[in-house]
Amino acid sequence: MKMNPAAKCSLPIALFLVIAFIIGCATAPPVDWNNRVGHYTYGQALNELGAPNRQSHLSNGTTEFKWFLQPGGPAGTPNNGMNNGFGVGQNVSPGFNDRYLQLTFDTNGMLTAWFKNY
Image 1 (cartoon, rainbow, N blue to C red):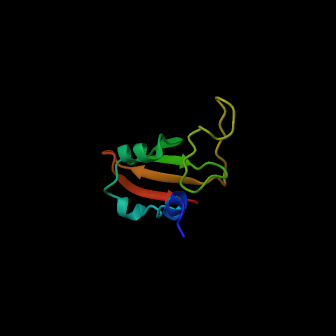
Image 2 (cartoon, rainbow, N blue to C red):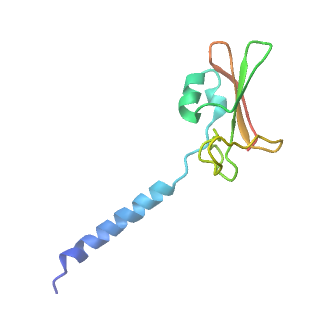
Image 3 (spheres, helix red, strand yellow):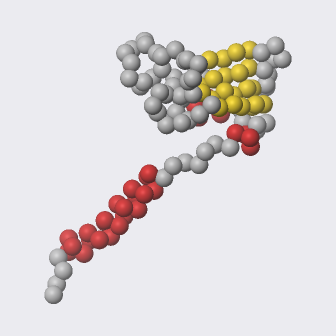
């Protein structure tokens, strides 16, 4: 019995699609912020997270930056006022229970401390 050429290709294509789906759905490992202290720069944070939502200059010369997370979005998704379901120019003010990532950088732009509440 001869197989149709399309039937011969369907099994490898189906396997490829299943493998691609599984790989595409895999979640990235969580960031180990402890290993980044002393090695991670503010420039790298900007590239990875985008512009922060808040910043505070502290009396010891360091600067704290906060990235608020999108409501209902996955942990680690910064909320920079874009694509958050609100109209142009509107943004949600962060509240007491909002989830955020806070990174503290020294005067040279090197990460010295971090905190997250998500």
